[in-house]
Image (tube, rainbow, N blue to C red; front, side, top):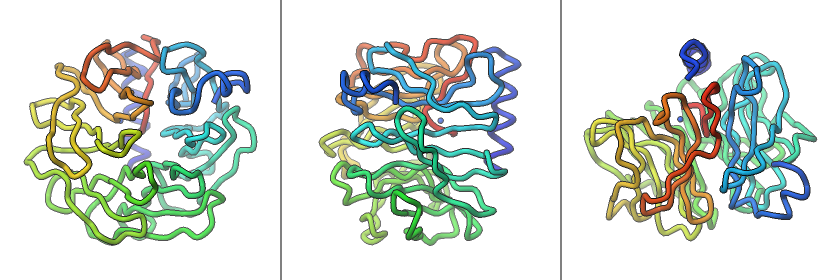
Length: 293
């Protein structure tokens, strides 16, 4: 279902024309100041993985495959990228070096495996899969071994993300009737609910110090980016516009996010207080996304 939705969304965006890099670049800026995203730019009809610095410079294409490569995530040291791809016929998790080399398939089944993210130490990958009938949160070693289910609920659990110390995993779930944010220990224990509204709260991302979580919510009518303390308290808006702003990702002390504020889908970055928003991907003829939403 998610693959069908993805292909339809890609077709609509195409009709409208409108959630790594080189070794030298890896030395110039740490991974915490670079953004990996997916785009159908450069005249292709499929989505590929790109990276760009947080100042918008040195945009580099990383993957080159006729199928869809989406939802990339850079390891903290910048050496590896994990992403999802349908190159074997369904959505699976893959990894590769920051320059696109050593591509390795980590999951292999007839289900849909999506939303991968590295653990802070690069030793594990957390992801979502419907292999057991509905989307749940799973974890595995960086080489794809020891795949373990962490959640077990009839609802959809998706978009997991590690805390900076690797001890906690925040994720999105509709187990209480609408999408809210939850957090649990990295072994699946000690589940806690972070948000509780009638709106949809999705796409959590921890700040570099672990004290705050950025997320997307439509609590004010359209999706905007919000910040809260890691325990769910003190929720404040970061963006406030009529656009759809989703998929926040802390990049150093700033927050990257996907938005259609320019008409097409682009990747923007903003200060945590909402100031200084600017376009990183900047291609009005393409659809640029941080995640497959």
